[in-house]
Length: 219
Image (cartoon, helix red, strand yellow):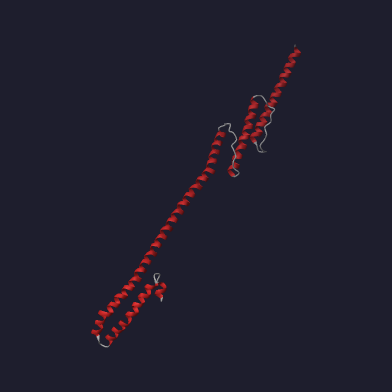
């Protein structure tokens, strides 16, 4: 019964082997009985003739079951190896995919953070050289965008200082520079210098007017 339940092949193969065993068992019992009662030669002859043919038939039936079981075992092993190979392949593909994703993320981070910072570094170097740098375009609302906005404020403030210096060099002392904050030391210094130059100019104009007036009176 256990063989019938476990056997995955044709049930008829099990029944055929069972019937061969049932047919052989009485002959086996008869041989054992003859040996017990001392009829050894008859038992040997019976074993060589009738029992041998039944054993050969039984062995053939059992070999059918064994061959099928072996084929199923080989098939199971093949499926196991295929499953193992597929699992290994999937793991390799997952590792490759993870590596490629890491590369893409690293490239995105490089493009999104390192490149803008490198650009701002070049802008800062140009500002340090006294170059007139145009405002930078702000396309982001994260920390990098805030940093670009801060740079633009510096660029705008430097532009106003340059304009104030040009006005002073042209003799225009009436324009006032707008302070960026209460701690804007550079703006205060430019404002004080402008006021001082303006007072000096006014004093010079008064002296010129006074001297010209005296000269007119003397004439």
